[in-house]
Length: 70
Image (cartoon, rainbow, N blue to C red; front, side):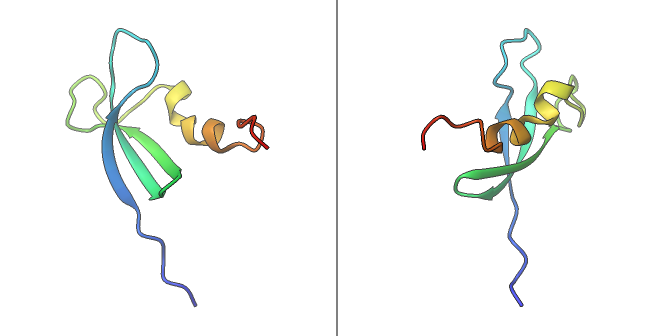
């Protein structure tokens, strides 16, 4: 049986060019993989919530067709 993966949380900002500049709470699953992204609870604008574009950011980044390098 393997030990459960350790999920690290890091804070970041949204990569989109919106005027809101949302603060993010990002789950880091490994050196090259992110998990769920939430709005930073400590920022009054996001208050733990992000838009639909950013909520699915990990799925877009890690999708098999997202990378053009074989």
